[in-house]
Length: 196
Image (cartoon, rainbow, N blue to C red; front, top):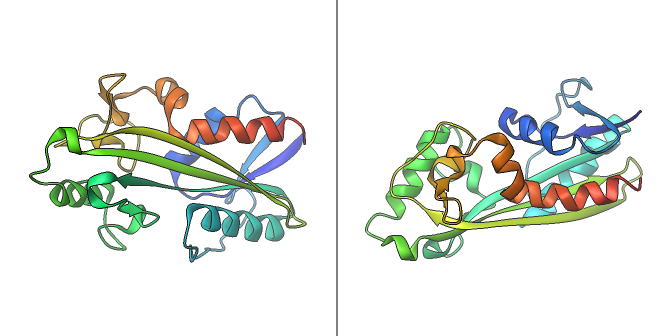
């Protein structure tokens, strides 16, 4: 069976990808499975640049077809913040709870109807030879006034999905993997991988 390297050290993200990539005929390997400890600075100015940067570096180092992504949260009332800085929005060493609280503090006083937002994900798939394809997924929603739910990771506890009446962190993994930005980008990526 062919191998696909999953270029992330984020355990929550890795769990989601293992479930999302089940339909494809590849053995999914993590960076630790491949013995890779290289860290890549996300110096790109867009999700696309960051995803492609990680995918190409790890594909070259591992000699494997590699999937990497960059994702973020964009809040309309904050003119698209935190965007590509989502993971570092509240500072380099901030916890997920710190980031959620910082985001909520920036939205203090903004009414629920004006708290529209979207999760975005761009997946890059790179060959060891440097060929890259990009696949984008988006999930619209709203930012709550306080965190809700124990599942998920990142901004999931404050991201509300009106159609489901729940935050992303209140969804089961199966529910999340039908609607999330990552699921939508992965569906497009899987179509390509099935033909590899």
